[in-house]
Structures are given as C-alpha cells and as structure tokens.
Length: 346
Image 1: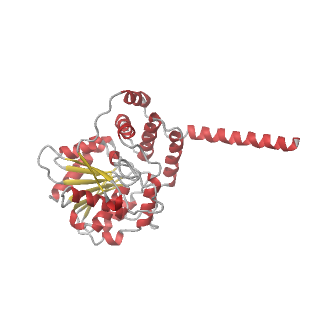
Image 2: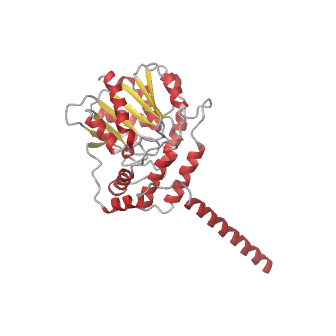
C-alpha cells in the first residue's frame, strides 16, 4: 500500500510539473504586443465606443437561416456597388473601418455581411449534421443583392472570402462586374502548391489558448492583436491597436460576440468545396489578384496560379504586406481597387 501511495505521489508530482511547464509555455508564447498596447486597450475599455454600423441593415433567410448584412451608401449617387467577403471565422466587422470609409468616400455603395456561424447571423449549432459549403455562403450574398434590388456588383474577397467570391462568380456570373481576390486560392488543398503554413496555424492556436482560456474583454482584444501580428509575418507595419480594440468591444457589447465554432465550420466548408480552377477558366469577368509578398499563412504561389487561371486578370504584389490589410496600405489598396473598378465602369 505504501509503495502504491508513493507511486501515486510521484505521478501526481509529474503531472503537476507537466502542467506548470505547459502553462508557462502557453503564457510566454505568442508575439510581444506593441508598445503602449495595454494603455491603449485600457483607454478603449473605459471610453464610449464609436458607432461602427453606419448603413442600412437587414437579414435574408436562406433555408430557414438568418444572415445579417449592412449596406452603406455614399453621400452622392453611387458609382457602383462593392460586395465584400471576409476571411475565415471573421464577421463583417473584420473589415477595418477606415478601409470601408475610404471605399464609401470614393463614391461606392459598400455591402458587407456576416457569414453563417459569425456575428449577427445564425451560428449554426447543428452545422455538423447539416454542413454547408462555400457555394452556400455565396448564395447568401446573392440573396442580399436581390433583397437590395442590385443587379450587378464588384466583388472583393479576402483569403477564404476570396474563395467565396469565386464561388459567387462561378454560380452567378451575370451579377458580377469585376472580381478582386486578395491573398486567396483557387484550391487551398492543391497538392502542387505549398499549403497554408502549419507553423502559423500552430502559433494562432497557441495564442488562442493563451488569451482564450479566460476570455475577458481585455484578453479577447489581445487575442485579436496578437493574431494580426502573427499574420503580419516578416512585414514591417504598425498594428491598429485602438481600431482593433474598438471593433472587438463593439462585437462583444453590441452584437453577439464571437462563435468559437466558426473556424471549424468554415474549414469544413472550404474542404467540401474542392478545386475551382476549371470553372474559373470559363469566366469572362475582369479580375484583379492581390497578394502580400511576406504572407506567412497562404503562400503567394496560390495567387499566382489563381491569376493564371483567369482569362482577364491583372496582378498586384505588395512587398511589405502579410496576410492582413495593413493600415499603412489602406490608401494604396483602395487606389488599386478603384482603378480596377473605373477601368471597368458599371
């Protein structure tokens, strides 16, 4: 009996030691947050939040599902409509507010929406029994255009959003005026191209543990800032700490917050959708493909192959950009976008 108790004691000590080491590894993992980040976050926590929803909002209801959208009109007659598709597990507010404002100030109506599983849209608790694909996310966007009586739009998709935009263009080509794909892929599982970075995925998982075990408002803000820093890779640009803090707090306080299952849902949707290269070759839609040369997550070769599959496509590679929209490049990006829209006026 004494030997058994001694063994239990040793095992207990080993388990505690492993937990301590693992906890320390998690605590010290992830990037060092920008200087004065705590001060900026604390100020945001105590301040009144700016209004981030400035347009007409509504819902469409595909297959007994509620999907939220926002339509923002310019002060003058719109030059056209831009339909936005955000990245994986992100809702409509993942688009930086100043970036949205620049597009609207350029004279365009801007529409953004919450994917299924995010934001104010249904979170799909039974998604494993009724899985959905990128094509269904694209259908949601099409129903939004129909609800707003918009016949045609410029599509702008980021990362997974670029894949949804492709699915939209393939399924509803007559409603697409131009197609802009940022740091995306025609087939993220393409065996001929290096896939998404496993190390970056691991780094993102570590900070999810670090800040997500105790999901206070402050920790969730830090999680989003750290994720942007990881996705920045070796690029050298500032992170918008204040804007990120306000966006996170707005979601937490004025919307439904963040769905922990969203990433799994969207990964499954991507996996179910397969390659789009052959279908993309049939498109006759003017396209622009953008990628950051320092993207640590989706290798730029995906965008290069994607561009080669499109019959009418030009490319723009930004040297100092990772897998994110850098604040320092908002103006340059919007300039490229507007140039593409105006060369193909609606």
